[in-house]
Image 1 (cartoon, one colour):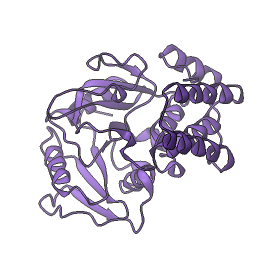
Image 2: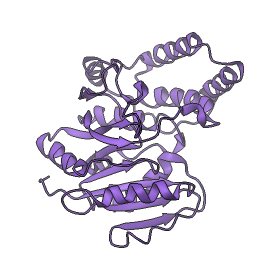
Image 3: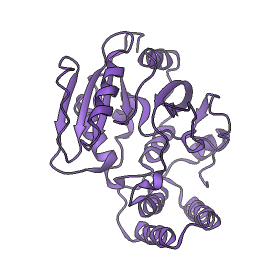
Length: 297
C-alpha cells in the first residue's frame, strides 16, 4: 500500500434522513487527496436523491432490509469481491459527517505506516457539544476519548478497514442483523494477526443518541452476545464470558420489559443457529488480554 492508496466508502441508509445523507456525502467529497468513491446502499428502501454527486457516488437498492452487517456486506462487494477494487473502505453512518477534510488522507497514512494495522476506529463526537460518549470509546478505560490506542473492537458506523482483512477473514456476520457484528469481525481479524487502532484525530460528527432507541436493542444485544461467544471463543471461555455479561446486565437493573427482552434474546442465542464456529487461538486470547480486554468481558 502506498500513500496514494485507493479509498472507498460504504454508507447504508433506510432513506429516512435525506438531508443528513447529502451533508455526509458532501463532507466525503471534500476529502483531501484522490476522490473517495462512495456506494450508498438502500437497505430495503429507495436511496434519496444523490444526483448532485454524479462522479463519485453509486447506489444499490435492496428489496428488503438485510440488517446493518448484511447491508454493509453488499456495499463491500460493490467494490469487487471482498472490496478488492480499493485498498481501504470507510464505513460511515448516514446521519454522520466528517468535519475534517484530511480524514481519508490520515487513513492512507495510518495504513501505510503500519503493515499490521487492519482496522481504524474513529472518534464519534456530538456536533453541538463536541463530547464523545463513553460507549463510543472501544476500550474498558474509556474516560479519556482524546487518547488514541490499540483496541480490541471498533465502532461500526465510523471506521476504516483495509480490504485485505475481508479477503482473509470474510465480511461481517449477516446473521447478526444488528449489534456486536463489529466485535465478531474484530476478533476474527485479531486472530488472523491484524491490529486495530482507535484514533481520536479521525472524527465523525454524530448526534448523541441512546442505543436503546431501537425497539429490538435488548433482544439483539443478548442474542448476538451469545452467538459471538459460540462462534469465536474457546469452549472453556464461553460460559465465563456469558456469565460475566449476565451478571453485569442484572447489576445495571434494567426495567422489567427490558430484562424480559434481554433474557429472551439470551435464550434465543443458545437455541438458534449462529453461523460457523471458528474458535480463536489461545495466543489470540492472550493478545486480547495484553491489549486490555480479555475475552471474558
